[in-house]
Length: 245
Length: 249
Image 1 (tube, rainbow over the protein chains, first blue to last red):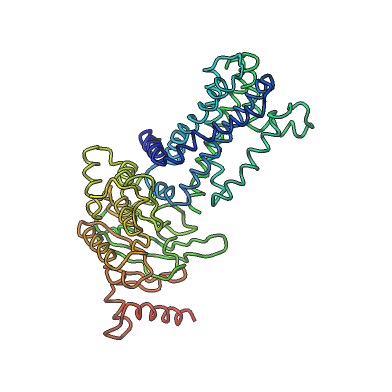
Image 2: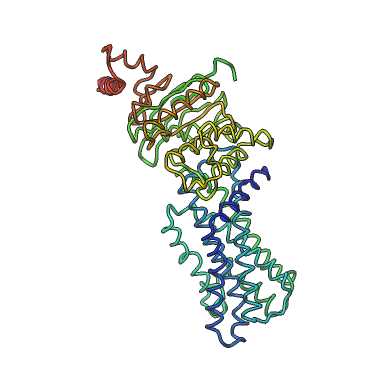
């Protein structure tokens, strides 16, 4: 790997998105609108306090996955990815470059969501704020790689959008966001145990509702890091397949 | 690379997408410093051949050598590639696009990079508009930016996939002037096209049809092969098709 090459790609993505003012505005406004609606639909603060960790994890996954998946797909469809693939840059440099480029914007959205949740919706939490941020960063890193990997299987934006009900929605239902995993049938519990959002929700709830530390939720954190590594490897391995098609 | 080594060499290369045979035991050799035209109708396999030669896809059988080496990342910095799509970042300016490709192709020295970026943009006559966003440019200007991106790192071998498609006649002439300048500097050009207007500008040609090279030589040699002194390249191409059909039957 040549870090300067990954840095060049990351810088280019940042420059590109910054110059796309409408996208930049949407990156900021959309999470604010969504969080405002959620706040208004939960007038009982205790209910919102309970559901907030799951919402933070889900929205971080959803926004990061969507932003990366669509942006990366554009790289494929407009031929720029193929052009990079013909250059001396390695696949790992490409994945790392895209990861850091998109990560910055996914992080921006996540920071907006967390700060809005805590300071505007007035959600109470017990853990350390910086630990919530660290945990969220792990979630978005995994989601960015998942977006890159998933975009390999889509040939256009319509197909990419179909991955949302396939990848994001089942996790909302199966990973303890709406009802506890323990109340589901055994086979669904098993399915939930192989989905990243289960560990994201579990870990974030422990930090925010029980005041646990990152060390206490080490298992959830380790599984999330594991998912991130696996998605990165899959993204790098499948890169040529997508570019060549 | 030895001086007598072809810049590009393909031996018995075959490629297929699923059951569709796109290239069939194709062989070619391109000497250094010439413009080599791959001429043929749409679907002849020109783009697939170029993608194979630059290493984006691997042949099912046969071998490829670029500057004496198999296509790989190790040699990619010595290759330029202008794909059929513009393949540019529309939100970025002309200079940002060209600078990005210079960095990607390892032009690491900053002063040298700035100089090469300026040279490439001046060559395609867009220096005055270097700060314009690519999305605000016409199709022809995007083609020129795409060419600048492909040549910015001074590659000795340059692959151009249908570079003149969609260009008006004036711009087409300008492009061929650029190509002539590049070959005069020792660059080897492999240019795909489906128009015979382009063919006449090339030093050497390979007529392609249905995944095979059906004739090769200089434009004059291919015209002479028809047996008619005043034949055009269109006639030479049709003659090659008939001759190939006769050999096959």
